[in-house]
Image (cartoon, rainbow, N blue to C red; front, side, top):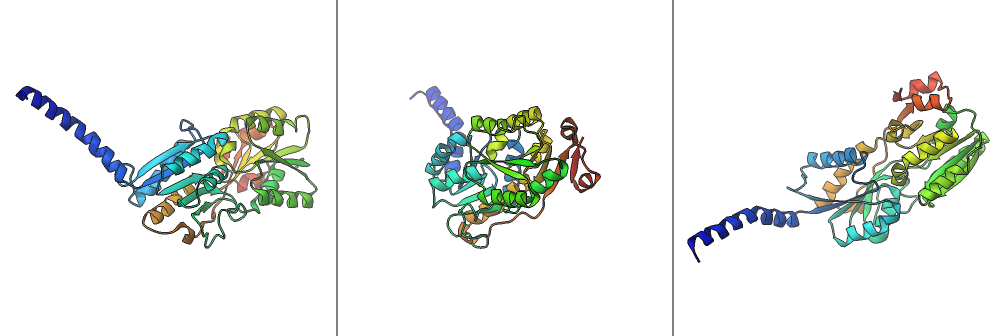
Length: 325
């Protein structure tokens, strides 16, 4: 071989070595699969990703250096396939954000450790045996207990006292015990409660559209990534029909929804890193207690309230953690 050809080949090898070394290093790192229900381009996902990676970094896990993060994104119809694909890649831990996502992951694996975020009533949906000792392959951070349904109804009634009927938007048959809480409080206060179970955007439009022209009607939107994806559709229809609605997370109120009452989801996402850390260090998810929510925040969008012709009481405004004007 000529000296010039040898030098050329040697230089090419040096250039390729860092890429090969990086690929080998990445393959040797533990993998955490993260599956979310939004599009990767949705602005709402970026604070969540940042919160999760910040929580991991606080515990010594940094993407590309000590851990590999495999993010997956899917709408409701594509969640089973996305979950199955992630499970097939055999990560050491899966992080599932949202009830409908967890249902797809639960169907795909009962062996890979799973950390859930934003799951309402995990006992009621059957993913853990109990909160203190979950058992099985799942644990995480719960967001709402069943009694929260009644609190949403009471808060909605407080901001819109004229209501006599409320529709409860949920995905499929999820959140059954929360729905029961709404129904129980509805009976006690003389309100009609309508179960609005949806599976896609068409069903969502039909469910809300069924209340068109019906006065004294409001909506309770239960927590699920599906409703985050289609929040603009919900805003469009509720504004057109002039129906007040209450939401489970503040990003709905920030984006134009009337009122939200719930947990700080980004704090929960950050806290989920604790479980990932413990599992990567050898802990079994079934031995790690589920964390319950400790703080709730009430956010009122006064601009939307005025557009709906609602006069928000001084007492409710005083209780609010934030008022958007």
